[in-house]
Image (cartoon, rainbow, N blue to C red; front, side, top):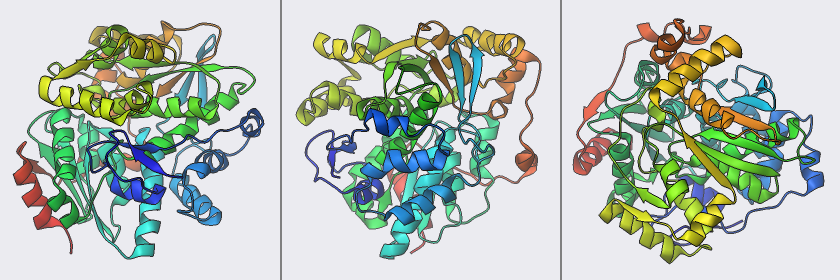
Length: 462
């Protein structure tokens, strides 16, 4: 299995190389040269299997000879052993033909745990084998950072630096990043938005002297392994509702497009998905692009769903690569327009191709709050604001195919919004009950590449 860059100018890599590299040296994102196929019989055989076995069968064709079957199965088992639900990703019925996929039973209460816990295990295995050390730098709008810190804290071969937008994440999200005591993890509050943090991360990867000097690795959803781990729960949930013998649809609250791109890969593999519905908050660049063809950035408006307060959705580049018939030069030109002019327009033909797989919708702040209230009153379900956006948009797209809405975070991660909508402040799980009492450790940093690189060089273990 080989991996190629969406911009066509970087060397092909193995799975292990792509995982440890993150961003391609031409600025593109790695994708598999070919998407492995699962037959109808292969998919039907997943019914009733434990989540870990489904994960092994779905991901195994992508990893080549990076891990033996025995080692890979063991890494998967370790990754999900700490989840708080035996089903790992249980389904709940909200209403006629509408289901909620709970993805918040991991150690940091968000869907990012499905990928990050596994990446932590895979990094540890690969680095132990090679004897090398890496510096992981990540940018987060809230959940990726805490999941990455939880996965890598205390590991000998890794230093972890997480950039998050100062004052633009929830208190629970912030404390999950700032309270770990291990000296190999560093929470950095950047003066700016998530888009600023993500831009500086990409700048570091494109500064090859720095990148090579600190052996930079990335665990944002620019990392293909992140996307791959998320493909699994599309299969597990669809099979539970009758796939491959009937098609299902998914609605995904998304800002950076990684989670829903995993659904697109599941469809490319052969899973019968009717529609993939993109749900956005008021920062609705994805919805605007999918409906008008214009991907034009605007100011980020802070919201009660901060993990979606994004205007530059990195993983959309992976979708464009397929939509433009894997023409790396065409994608590179679009990304240059985005960087220099603040946006681009896709052709009508491309927009039509996207519409064959994707639909979209948005929710305002008031609509998000009212959905939280209604879900509590009529569905007996307490939703985080991101999941509420998904439910609201999903309800606008219900039809004959079962609709699965992804619940991306536990409501206790966003207690202020939930309390405003319901009058109830959701408690943290028992294992996190003392989170508000723990001491915080954080460094405020300017939105400046040189300052960030100097700080990282100063703090890494050599």
